[in-house]
Length: 301
Ligand SMILES: [Zn+2]
Image (cartoon, rainbow, N blue to C red; front, top):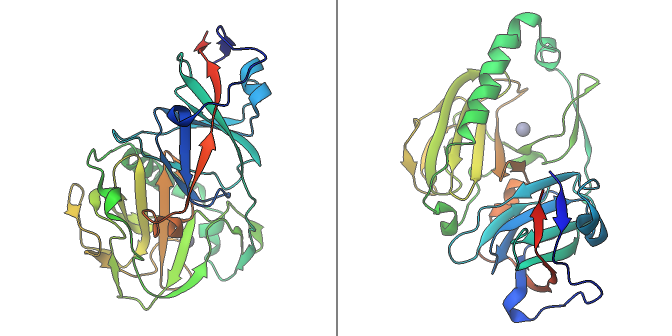
């Protein structure tokens, strides 16, 4: 897809006033969740600067579209590898298109060595392919099942109290073999400890015996926001259940690819994984006012 400027106000980038401004709440940092206010129709362009955006789309690495609530609030997860220079475009492709340049601070990702994992869980055998594709398909499908109620506004809590045994974003090395970065936060707790829904929502997956995640629950909180609970000993909810923040949804276990009892807690917004703890202050994040640059109408070819 390419954009063509047809109505650019050349030479007079208008720094617009209050009616075209955005409140960005939260840490503008890799892997964090932001809450946007006074948004209209938000698209995040990773690794893009204004000149790139206006000229062509060829320098745009990736873009994420956010759902905006009727009061102008939107949730935007910054990818783990988000570039320092990125853009938020509001209402692109209309006469009122506005862009905001943001500087994304880097996060420090540790390297985590995990030893003693069953070797077939690191390098699966051919016969595990079917099992793994069932898991990937179920997760993919669950992440399209949207709750239209905006449960996320009720806020979030830790699902289990315990020691954080693995941080989001860590580069993981299993039995000496580098694998994907860690997609959630691990919380160590004794097997059988109750796991609570970190926020109210609708259960969109309660799956069993997955190759990597064991027994797993996924909850939709509305507005393309989901939380994930993996390696459960047992889940106590089923697909379609409505849960309240703090309700017990299962018990800590070590099913799937796990070396000991812990909860893997994950979070996804608009298809982007982020550090789940940044949900905890969702209604208390510090907000900053950003003036936009009016870009007029950029239309798609
Ligand atoms: Zn984990």
